[in-house]
Image (cartoon, rainbow, N blue to C red; front, side, top):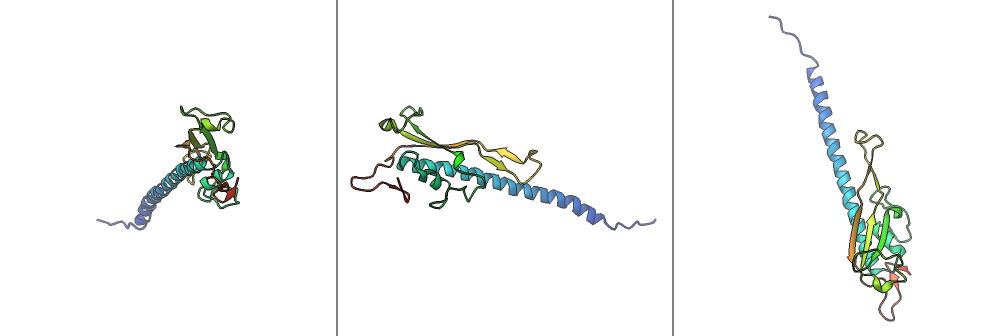
Length: 165
């Protein structure tokens, strides 16, 4: 009986197993990135609603603080690439939860504040998920009851998170 040498079989086996291992590893990393992005979008909506409840109507600090940027910075969020002020929507609601068309004219009718994150496109690093590697993120929103809406105590100057009104 003649024994045939099996040189190179471990290389082929490693190529098959290694490709599967790295594909699973990169899938886990991409899933972790997506969960991080979704959680950050949810936090941006929550922070925006909290700031909108205590700052004057449509104040510039609402978007800045929600995006977790520095004072004077009007750019995108440093934590999620491509998330900017254009994705943040602010609504002032009456006691039934209906949107108020003119919040400044109906200031006393405001009972709730809603901040929404819409239109954000998440770009994956894996090309096989979709043809252009872009997934439209679901909308995130947070609704909180109004608080001061930027009206300071008597004698205090109206300042909202380091920015004058």
